[in-house]
Image (cartoon, rainbow, N blue to C red):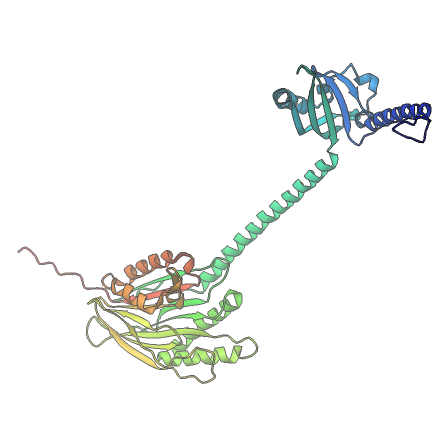
Length: 427
């Protein structure tokens, strides 16, 4: 019976041995070929760094010959000055401690003064008794990665410059909006004989023009007109309506001192101009002050066009709203009906006008409207300080709302100061 080998039962033993030898030789040749032409660089160094073996791929990258490298150069000789410094201070110490270090970025010196960015992985090979024998290093070409990182850095710099430019543009826009917003309000309130006036404007967003407005101006040598309101919407269009509204009310009040007549004039202007596809309207409260029949008092007549009611703070410690019934939004209907309400301010009394940003602020958890009742209670605690102290207290209240205050708010307070106490002479 003929004997067959285990590797190939159909082939004679002599033939099988020849095949095994040929196959081993083929494997050896293939391994060496793979080492030499691998897509990455390989080199082996002695423990002092002397290069004992290097593949053709790495030699081609560097533009060097094997004879010029093997046994003649150390690994650090292939590095740039910066790479050599990093190798000596970081790479080599870590390799000695850990036995392996992976994907460290270095730069190699190539022919022609070129720099070759690479990623290096090194492993210390030891003998059977644990003694270090040599260092095997794999070198990956990082030129594409460096190019990607450079492009990424460039794009990042471009984006950063664009961000800085956008921030600068935004700052210039803010400055322009601030100037425009200020142009819609009086620079300062005029001094009214026998009275005190104070105002405040809170801007909810520095990036958007608000539509709140107020004004105080003389009609003649005895009477003073005032108004406060809120145009619907935000931005340049609202600002245009605000400007139109403010100057229309000033002109209308100078022609006819009746507050209801001024509102009717404003309604006609807004309705005629904006009754098409882009309706614009506002709320407003208009008033006229005139010295009263009693010395030290002032008579006030007010008309409202859909605006929150004025709040009257009395020197005795009370705060009550002044009803202005029948007031519709200004600019909605062609022929609305506005009526007036009257009151008299005495020494220590204050009249407060405000826009709905104050009463519609969100407070508490869950968020609820601040509301007119809370405002009246707050005002009742500040009836003894006069207009300026009231506005200062309200400014602190608005600041306390934080993110709950998301709308612009205008405040205007008018009052008669308390008479100074009379001091008697000791004689």
